[in-house]
Image (cartoon, rainbow, N blue to C red; front, side, top):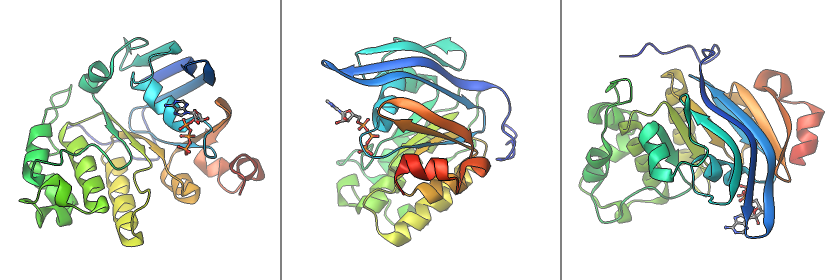
Length: 246
Ligand SMILES: Nc1ncnc2c1ncn2[C@@H]1O[C@H](COP(=O)(O)OP(=O)(O)OP(=O)(O)O)[C@@H](O)[C@H]1O
C-alpha cells in the first residue's frame, strides 16, 4: 500500500500540469489561458461565481471540450488532445454532479464493475473498505442505482471513483442539492480521501468548506485565473471575498 502523505505536506510531484488553457463553445470563448497545477496528495479548491468557467475547466482537462487549446500534462504524459476515456484510464476519476451511476445496476454491481487496480498496482480501496466508508450503501447493496436517493447516488458515484484507485479525484459540486446530513457525510468522506493521500480538485458552492478542506485555492473570473495561493493565506481575505461576491 502506498504511504499516504500528510494532507498539509503534499509531495512536489506534479500530477497535473496545465498551462495556457483556452476553451470555446462554438464562437463563445470561455477559458482564456488558465494555468493549473496539482501535486501528489494535494487538495485544490476551484472557486468562482456562477458561470465563471469552473466546470468548463474541469471538462476541458478531462478531454470533454473539443474546442480547446493549451498544454495538459497528466502524470508526466501529454494529454493536450487526449479523449475522455484515455484520461480516465490514466488514473483520474471524475465525480460529476448527480451522475456517474448506472441506474439499472445494483449498488453492488455498480461498485464491482468499477474495480480496477491503480497505475502503481495499488488495490487498497477494496469493496469492503468502500462499504465501510459509506455505511448507507452497505444497507442498499441490492437496490438499483435508480432506486437510490440523490445523496446515496452521489455516495455511490464517489465509491465507484475510489474503486478505480485514482491518483486524482475531481469532485464537481458533489454536495449540490443534497440534504444537510448527507452533505456533512460527503464532506467527511472528502476528508478521508484527502487523508488517504489521493489528490483532489474540488468545486463546491460552500466556499467556506472548500477553503477549510483544501491546501490551495484557485479562483476563476470570466474564464481567467485571478487569484491562487495557500488556503490558509486566502481564507477570510477581502480579495477572495471580492471575487466570490460574498
Ligand atoms: N455546453 C455549453 N454550451 C455553451 N455555453 C456553455 C456550455 N456550458 C457552459 N457554457 C457557458 O460557459 C460559461 C462558463 O460556464 P461553466 O459552467 O463552466 O461555469 P461554472 O463556473 O462552472 O458555473 P456554475 O457554478 O454555474 O456551474 C458560462 O457563460 C456558460 O453559460
